[in-house]
Image (tube, rainbow, N blue to C red; front, side, top):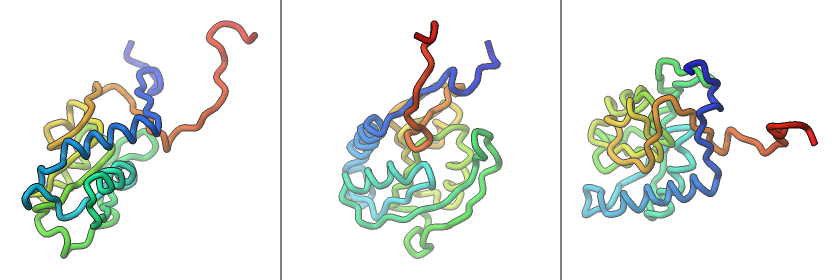
Length: 167
């Protein structure tokens, strides 16, 4: 069956799971920076990369944190990636020593755009799909390309009707 709704092959991520996975990402990155293992800064790709970037920066005690805003989705429809806010130019250079963090690499369009601007940066995501996988340097969990990841900031707890009956 190919006409599934996004929630029918969904990977639901709770706040706890995202926190554990982002900490695991930090542990994997610890000591891997070019300056005796240290990173100069963390740059989160907004909006999805903000939470993992904050967790990674906390875990690795990196106090210099910035953002790059890239819009590539309109609700659940992927569009051409475009930068809407750049990080500090004097901080970034060619990206050497910079850790760029996002929640997910899907098709890789966002990372491809950012990598063109900062070719020496290290790209890390919490989750990766096969099409985007070659563009990320470090990630924690791979999911299939047709899986929709539901992040906790997109979800709300609510009543769900029982599968059979209403009693």
